[in-house]
Image (cartoon, rainbow, N blue to C red; front, side, top):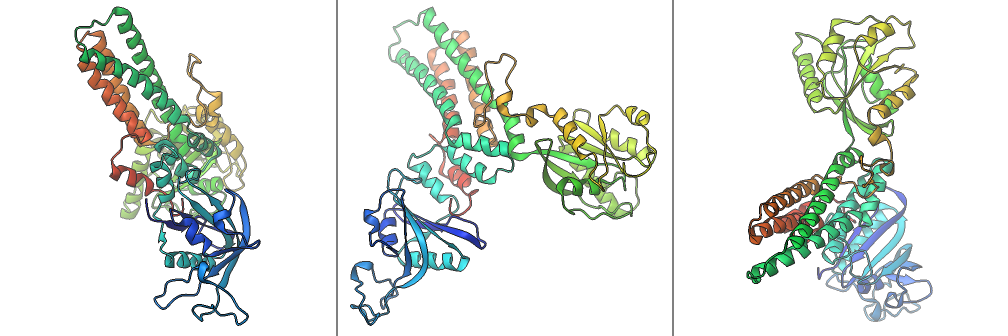
Length: 497
């Protein structure tokens, strides 16, 4: 990490403020040659994490195109540089500058931020000047990667950064913020240290084979391993909750043609996403969008109407509807309340896998009702009446979703297991499939160690299982990870973070 990197850390469009971040051993030198504070202070003397107002300047260049450094500049009344005869530096922007010195910075290196006006042209010009000073463009996630490599955060915290940036719900943001504070890392660190203590003891046994392990110590370590397994299983169990908070619930909207599936999608989204006409079979392909319904993030999939058809294009749409059903974790069956139930309605209901939660939405409540409550009750499914056209009744759909998913609709602080021993909190929910896989392997290894210990096998056999568990935990926190996996994780990040 000897080179110095820079990137725009804010969005690519026009905005009020645009931030350029610089990190590396030359960050202060380069920034000092581009920034002139209003009070004449050099950045070498700047207080850490204090903002200074001044000018960002474009330095005149020498014959080889390299910039003339501030130490050689001596303005005179002619406006020309004394040493080169070139024009004195011209102002690119008026900005604020903040310095963070190693090791107490985000990356663990010297860092400088320019808070400029948010013109893409201005930000691009500042970057180009930095590149002339030998700074290079930062790669996606490189600032956070440097923070991880310098020990400023573990891998769970680094992954929480991108989760926080990409969070789509308040719950997802709170959980990512808790992980960024190190809640997962602290739990895993405690488990890791407990396993290290046990492993150290068994190593001693192997080094001194003539020493016996008394029954008290055996039971003590057995209890410790069982406690570790319980903690790992609890973390793993939180993945079901965490991945829903982060990714949402795949939700298929199905029904026969012309019941108002696309109108319902548009009503839930609040804008016209799907084409709506009176012609049956208008929707030929699946459309996916996200919306928060009943405090739960739903990945809504509008599907083609389910019916028998000879139209080849519509057949493809029906096939895609069936495929969407196979991956759905919630199904909304849309019925037309202005018409009696038809065979296609029953076919649509029977197409839903039996273990998938489902709710019926009786649409078109703005029209005279034909479909009675008695008929709907015969379907054996929860339902609510709405008008996708006017939005009437959508709040009742909210309540039904909350009732179907009370765990996900509630705050994690309000939930716990049957014993009340473990209370899930924001920041302690696993949302990452990579972490969940490593937890599964670690818990499996601990289970094998417990089995081996109770079977009175030799200590070296128990040691192999404990070492496997430690290795899997190390993958989560980053204690032992392959470079290609680490690079893949940070490639998810945006440039500038």
